[in-house]
Image 1 (cartoon, one colour):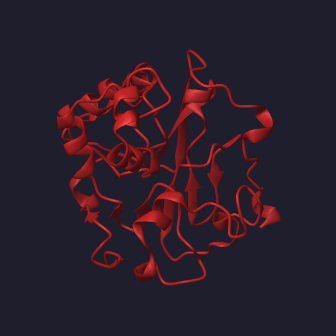
Image 2 (cartoon, rainbow, N blue to C red):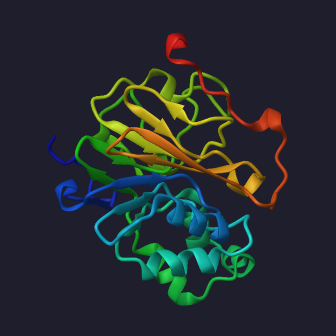
Length: 231
């Protein structure tokens, strides 16, 4: 599949998937360095494997700076810029709260809003199935959730039908979203639930249980994915 096209304001990186043995896509980390390291160990990631994160490396959890440093030091780990990264770029208080230095902020600002490889597209929030991908803004790619408002259904992934397989985070899920053309991976590690990774080659999931709840979130605030038969 040809790389996707975006408007010039959307920074996008296309990756040749043939360079990598295994490819893993990880959900929102939110400063949970311990669980992130545990996931890398569980996956037994080598220098020949690629790890792509759906954004929101930072904020809410205990060690945003540590997570950013870990990603920066690993050449085979890439990420998109999530909405919480965007908040750091526009608010000095948020930077202080996250314990980040100026070099962290400069690195975050240089990360793309979208990654692609093979038939896959990695964004933080989602894509709007009602319009061409090329018409999307950074704000939409980072924040899209409901096609109505707030947390009201339909969510974009309930009606999206391809052709690309979109990997996303942003919305805390009671369980991963696994449909023909969508994979949702934010399973609320920072809220005491799990960090989830998807193996692109084998179509399997890996999870690491959170060791601690760093921010409270009621169970009712986790979105329950629809089953395939409900689509």
